[in-house]
Image (cartoon, rainbow, N blue to C red; front, side, top):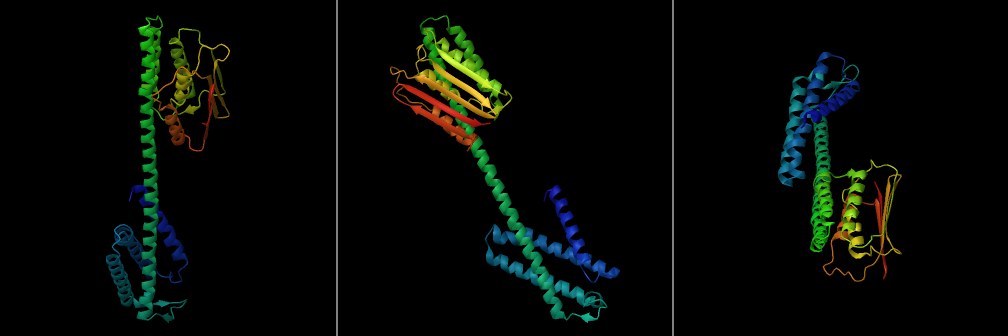
Length: 335
């Protein structure tokens, strides 16, 4: 047992022994006190014998026959030892009552010793069963947490190459066109990748850092478009110190710029980010670009849904509206 657990055990036994001693009639002489302490230690020994050595036969190894034989022998031998001690100290241990006028027979004392020993054995078994159940539950929770963390880490690693692939395609297009925007695009990408690789390694990041990342991403996407980009970005946040899962809204933005029309003045892209009373509301709306069909599909939104399930179970709502001309995605998350 660990040191702090040992102290707890000692404290519990001292309290229990004290209460039983105060309730005991035969405590009016020094020999009675000595033998009470001796038998208390003996019973505690029976408890731990069962806990450490006998109970595992039934609980862990499932060797029921061997366990039953060992338990029965331990019960019988312990009771015999108690009886032998009592016989050799009959005036002290086998007489009871206010004036010690009543005497237990050997059979009665043996039966009494048998019952008390069985009680401590069953107590040891029950405690081992409870301890094993608790440890198994903790191990299950730990394993589940580790599994979730591993899955989240894997999903996060999928974001980086997916985003990098799309961004490099955009920069390639700028370089191919010999656009003056190419150097700035590379710089923006460098800043974004620095955030993704170094600052977003924690389970949660500050909302301020995530918003800065979002704005950098939008500027990077604007650079790849020759014409005027029409985008209405609305940010209303009551507290930038909220913590949020990193890279949460990248999939929304990827879909907006990949499949939406960014150059239509009458139908601009609309992005809303609001945080009020610890609730994040993110919404992206865009007109569909029917000429841009991605035959390869994507993992973005599937990845996002799974990350939300793992990171914000029963604390998020994800809504998608998809028709012939417009696409809208909306997310509510309680931070």
